[in-house]
Amino acid sequence: MQSVVQFAGVKHPAAAATLKEPVRIVSDLHLAHRVSRIARVSALRPLVAGAGTMVFNGDTWQELTRTVVARSAEMLDELRCLCAAEGCETVFLSGNHDPGWPGPGWLELAGGRIVVTHGDALMFDGSPWKREVLAGRQQVLDLWREYPEAATDVAARLRLARAMARALPSQEEPFGRRLWQLVWDAAYPPQRALRILQAWWRQDEAGLEFCKRYFPQAEVLIIGHFHRHGCWRRDGRLLINTGSFVNPGRAHWAEWQAGWLRRGVIDESPGACHLGKTLNAWQL
Image 1 (cartoon, rainbow, N blue to C red):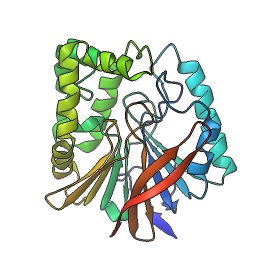
Image 2 (cartoon, rainbow, N blue to C red; image 1 turned 90 degrees about the horizontal axis):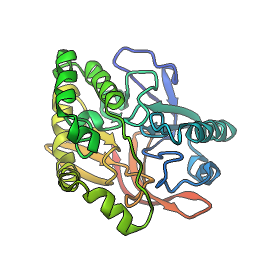
Image 3 (cartoon, rainbow, N blue to C red; image 1 turned 90 degrees about the vertical axis):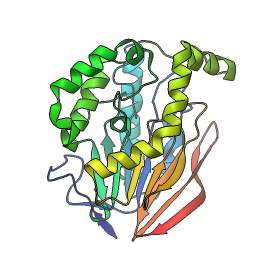
């Protein structure tokens, strides 16, 4: 079976008119990031096996992190080779850590009833918890003035999100993996922790607003970005966050095949990541 993929009239270089099913969606691998749980790309092979198309929904690699960009690029090449070896097509969507991917930054499945995008475009300031954003409020406002059409046009909104990611990249990485180190990183400065919690609480509301504004026909929005997996239904729409491979978040998967949308957990071990328990299934 194959499903139609649309790019708002834009021909995406990573996909033809159709995507091979099953279309499996994950996000936020953060390859080579200090706190990413993916130490070896080979661990992803069981997760990729059996997919017709893998959609990597943003923040796949650390394009903007100077200290790890070389190693991250090597791991990205390994990931592409692994997918090719498994006979799996790939679609890479842009995120705030890897804004350089070509294409519009989102895809549509099931005739536009399912929309997949990273999620930074849901928030006015992209990543409101970042220290650089907290200190760069004026830059955020200036960028919005450069893209006035972003308020009504989704292509412009995604271009703005990419520009914001490039203008305000993370300057530091967390200094450790232990829980107390992650808590300290999140809690300093104090308003950072508050912004993280506000973003977690608001992501369902922000997803609903995003769909109403840019994709009124969409019934499902699949995102990552917030590093908090979950599933919410609001005003007849479904929002799915597939989480992340960065502590303390948990990684989930979503999959589209033959009219069915499913989501579930990813079972991780040091040597392998597998499709875990299916949590929900919806027929569209």
